[in-house]
Each structure stands twice: as structure tokens, then as C-alpha cells.
Image 1 (cartoon, rainbow, N blue to C red):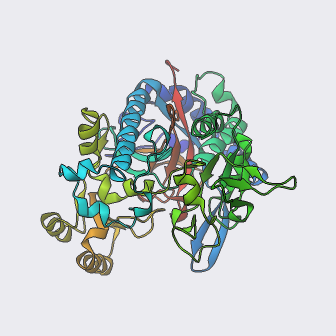
Image 2: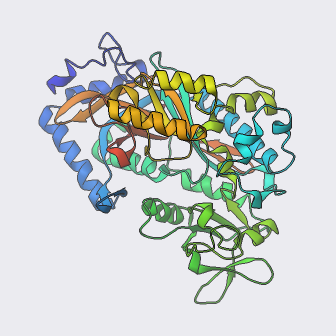
Amino acid sequence: MNESWKSYTAGSFFDELITPKGQPRAAARGVVRLLQKLPGDEMAERRAAAELAIREMGISFTVYNEAGNIDRAWPFDIIPRVISAGQWQAVSDGLRQRSLALNHFIDDIYNRQKILADGVVPADIVLESTNFKPQCMGMSPRFGVWAHVCGSDLVRDGDGRFRVLEDNLRVPSGVSYMLENREITKRVLPELFENYSILPVDDYPSQLYQTLASLSPRERRRPCIVVLTPGIFNSAYFEHAYLAQGMGAELVEGRDLMVADDNCVYMRTVDGPVRVDVIYRRIDEEFMDPEAFRPESLLGVAGLMRAWKAGNVAIANAPGSGVADDKVIYAFVPDMIRYYLKQKPLLASVPTWLCMREKDREHVLKNLDQLVVKPANESGGYGIMVGPHSTAAVRRKFARLIEENPRNYVAQPTLALSTAPTYIDDKVEPRHLDLRPFILQGRDTWVTPGGLTRVALTKGSLVVNSSQGGGSKDTWIVEGKA
């Protein structure tokens, strides 16, 4: 046995695999007991096998920093995270509810704006947001769905309760790593799969295909679906290629598409133009169409918005869906659920202070050393200040930024994020983690059984983003008792 299991303790944090008394939780009992039996040298061999598999499979991600764009091997921990199917069902129901309300909100904003007229959400924070696109006014995509792929970030608090930390509705990424994590775990710990009934995730590409196909403006047995990528230098290019291949769709760049005089989108091929029915866009809408957005963009397709507004092509996620992907708007999602669905929120949100409100701003400025401060529209963990881990100079900087542009900042309490056993430096130690499930919505709604678990590999750190030094684990939703 690796001796670190004997002394393992998460302290005051909720640990997902080990109870405060040091015993495995029921759903994780088989996993923990098998891993505890592995001697230290064999654990190291399994980790080395995982690292070799990652290199062989070409799983990488790109970090942007001052030194340039750096490709790195995917950081993976071999100890899986285990959640019971019973617990997950409640989370899944809450995510469906949340996705439905968010799509009602986006459709309302670009049409009647009833929620603004009724004062449920302040009009100025929506209409003055950089993510509100006037070019989309009057549109209502098929099924009234704008955000067809949503990645909601979840955390578990000190009581083990799941809470929504934020919603990602513009171009959510990470699902390919969720799928690859499962493949790696099967390679290096195959015996774990013999005694567990683990809900599969490998049908995600087919579920995504069905969602996209349901959006097609033409009734065809197999509509033409393309994945629109910015190109090989994008940090998520691995995922773009992975999903295109998994769906049997074409991976294209802007130069591969054109909008003809009939306001239809065509793909250039060696056999001539082929009409495109659905575009799964993985580029920011600002670069999507130089006619409608940034005229200098070389990544998009001139006329794409015209074709979309004419109803000749479906785009997922729809342009303008980012209006709900704002950390200020996030604070109003429980109100949206009550307003549109007449239901109580099934999933709790994290308490959020909006610096645009005077009382909230005063509270935040007085408690910067205790709070997490986030810019409203950044992603990837950039621009965040974690108060308890910050210096006085950093806090002064953020106080100035908040006072200069209060609309752009929100604050949340420093949560006691749950932990899970993680194999670090030949020892098993607790590390904080979060979870990004993916919700697909078209004709039907589907939630991944589990999602992408991101883990802070640095001891004591709460920052899980891979771009900030985080790693990942396979996430198991297990049925029955194991």
C-alpha cells in the first residue's frame, strides 16, 4: 500500500471519496480499496502509463502567456472522482431547468424583452452589455433555443451540496477532455471497470450530432453539419477536430465557406459547392461575420448573419447567446427560473455581490481579503483575484479597478471547495476540484452523466483551470452499490 493513504485527511473540507473518519464513501468503496492495495511503485507505473497514453493520443492544450503560445500535454490524475447516480439525478434535473430558463431569457431579450419591462432584470445591465448583439433582434431560432451547448461549472460546498458557480453559453469547451479522461482510465486501471456500473460518456458525439441535426432548416435524413474552427493555433483546436471526427462532420475554417446570392451557406469542395445546413461554431461571434461584426475579421464568413436570419442555416450556439454568459447576469438566473418556469430553482447558486450596486460595492471593498473577485466577461481563470491568497498590492489594484468600472466586477465568497484524493509526487493528497457538465438542447435536452472534473494540482489552491496550472480527473456516475 502507498502509505499516504493511511494518513490521508481533507481536514475541514468535504472530501468526495473519503469520510471524516477515514473510510471510503459508499459509492467509491471499490475504487478506494483497490487503489489502497496498489504498492507505491505500481501506482507510479500506472501514472507513467497514463502519461504515455496522453502523448500517444496527442491530447494537448494551449496556454497563452507572455512567452507565446505553448502546447502542453493534458495534465491528468489517475484517481477517478466517483458520484452516485442518485445524487447525480438531482443535479441533472437542476441543470435541465437552468438551461431551459436561460434559453427563455435569451429569446425574450431579442424579442419582447418582457423580463426587462417587468423589472425582474435591470434593462441597463443587459442592453449595455458587450455581449448583447442588436444584430440579433427579432430572431427566434428553431425551438426557441439559442444556447444549444451549455457548460455550467459546479462546485460542492462544505456540506457536499452542489452549487452552480457560473454558466458558459458562448463557446463552452472541455468536453473532448471529459471523453479522453475515460479512455485513459480504461487503459491504466481496467480492473476498476469490472465491478462498477458506470454511466457511459462516449455517446456524447452522437448526442451532439442529434442535437445539431434537429436544428436543420431542411428536412433531410442526414443534414450537412460542419464544425467552424478558427484554425490550428486556437487553444481548443484539438477538441474541434475531435468532435468533428466523432460526429462524422466536416471541420472547416471560414475560408472554406461562402454565402451565395440565395443567402444560403455553401462549403467549398473539390466536387463543387455543397450546401451547409448546420454550423457548430467554435469561434467568437465578433469574428464570425465581417459584414455584421468586426469588418477586419479574417476568421469568419461574410454574409453568415444574413443566411442565419433568413432561416437558411442553423448556427450553434446562436449568435447573441452570450448575453446570458455574463457573471452579472448569472446572479439573476434564480429569478429567471421563477419568472419563466414558475418553479423554484433546483440547484443553488453561489452568493454573488454585484459591484455596480453601491451597497454590494461597499461590502466588497471592505472585504477584499476574504472574497473572490471576478471580471464579468473573462474566462479561463484570467483576471480573478482570490482574496485570502492575494497580496495587499493586488487588493489595492482590484479596489481601483472596481471603482473605475463597477459594472465589470462581481464578488463571491471564498468557498470551501470539496476535495478528492489526487496522486501528486508519489503521494495521495487532497486537492480542490470543480465539475463542468454539458447540457445539449435542441428538440430534446440531454445532460452528460458527469462532466469534466478540473482539479487544482497545487496544494491549497482553489484555481482549477488548466491554463492556470490545473489538471483533470475521470468522473464516474455509478449505479447501485459498488
